[in-house]
Image (cartoon, rainbow, N blue to C red; front, side, top):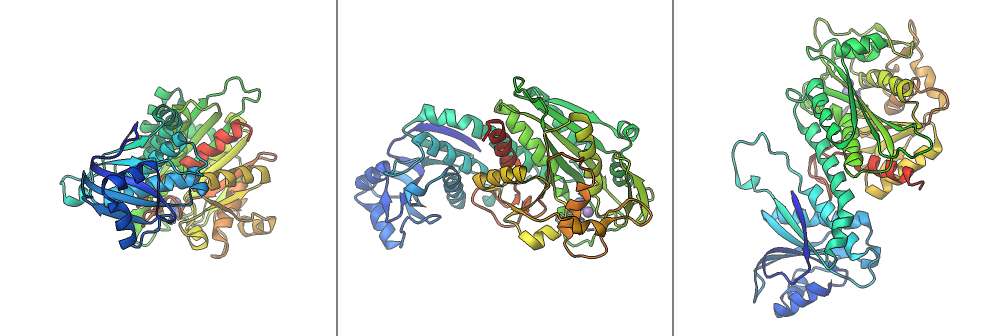
Length: 500
Ligand code: BES
Ligand code: MN
Ligand code: ZN
C-alpha cells in the first residue's frame, strides 16, 4: 500500500478517516468539517452511541453539503495518552475501516488535539506506519478479481507538518518494508520458497550494503555441521546457510556485531516422526524466524541504522524419505557434541545448534539472539499474544523485553534453570533432542539450544511459534503471516546502539 503525506485540509471528497477523542471531542479539522456539514458528525456520534473511546469506529455516509463518500470517525481515547504504539494501532484501525468499506483510497487526517504528547509529525508518521502494515496483502496467486479482492491501494495522511512527517517516516518506511518482506517470505508456499530460493532473495540485500554469504551443503559438511545436515538429508532440496553482515557503525570501538539467528525450515513435515495431516499446510511458516531476521537486516540497512549486526539463517526442508534421518540416529554437531535424534520433528533445535555455534565461531558476537518457531508448547503457554523469551543474561532479556513493549511485539520470559538439563542428557550420545515427556516443552527446546552457547556469551532465544502466524487480525496485522520480530529486532538493535 502506498503512503503519501499531504497538507491538512477539510476533506471535500472521497473517504476520510477522522480521529475523535473521548467525549465526542473533534480535533481542529474535524470540528471545521462538522460545522460545514451543519453538525452532521456530532449528530451521528450521538445517534450512534459513539463516545470516542479507543478502537470505536463510526461510518457517516455522504455527510450533507459535501461530496464526501464517507467520514469514518475513529475513537482515540484520551489524547494525552497517545503513544507511538497507540498511534500505530489507530492507523491500523483507519486502514481496517477503509478496507471494511472496500475503499481503494482514503485520507487519514492526523488532526490536532489539545494535550497530545506526540508532535503532529510523529502522530502522522505513526498513523501512516500502522495503516501501511494493516493494509498489507498477499495476492500474487489470485487470478480472479472478486468484490472481496478490492484492495486499499493508497492512504494520504494529512498533517500540518508534511516535511516533519516525511522525516519521521523515513525509518518507519524502512521497517515497514522489512515487515512486508518477512510476511511475503512466510506466506510464500514451500514449493516456491525453498532453501535455495530463500537464499536467492537474501542476495538482494547486497544492494543495501549488506555483505551476503551463502554456504552450500559441501561447505557445511567441511565445517562439520552434522546436526543441520541430518535434518536436510531427507529432502530432495539442498540446504543453505546465509549470513548477512551489516556494518552501519564502522566507528564503533567494539566492532563485534550482534548476531541474529533464524530457524528457516521451509517446510516441516516432521520427517520420519511425521506430523498428523490436519493443519500440516501451516508448516510452511516454520521459517518465520529466518524471515524475521532477514526483514530486520533489510530494515536496518535500508534506514542506514548506526549499528553492527549480522543475520544468520539456517535453511532446510524437513521431509521423510529413504534418505531421511531416523529416530535413534546419532549426529555430530559442529561444536563436537553428539546428539541423539529421538524425534525427527524436533528439527529446529538441530538446525539452530549448528547455526548458533557457527555464529559464535565466525563473528565473536557481543550477543546472540535466535528466533524460531520452535515448539507447539509455546502456543499452549502464551497463545498468539506473547512470544517466549529465554535468556542467560538479565541485561539482554531486559533490552529485548523493553523493545517488545515499545513495539507491541511482546515477550514473556520463561525460566531456563539447570534443573531441566537432566531431561536432555543423552544415553548413547551427549544430548537428546527431546525429553521423555510433554512437560515444559518450550523450556526443553531452549535448554537444548543453550548447550551450543559458549561460556560468557549473552544469548536469548525467542520462541515465536505462536506469534508468527495468526488466524484473526490484530490492530496493525492482517491475518496470516505477522512478520513478528522485525519491529522488535529493529528496536532492540537501534536502542542498543544508541546506548539506551
Ligand atoms: N515447527 C514445529 C513447532 C511448531 C508447532 C511451530 C506449531 C508452529 C506451530 C517444531 O519443529 C516441532 O515440530 N516441535 C515439536 C517438538 C516436539 C517433537 C518435542 C512440537 O512442538 O510438537
Ligand atoms: Mn518439527
Ligand atoms: Zn519445525
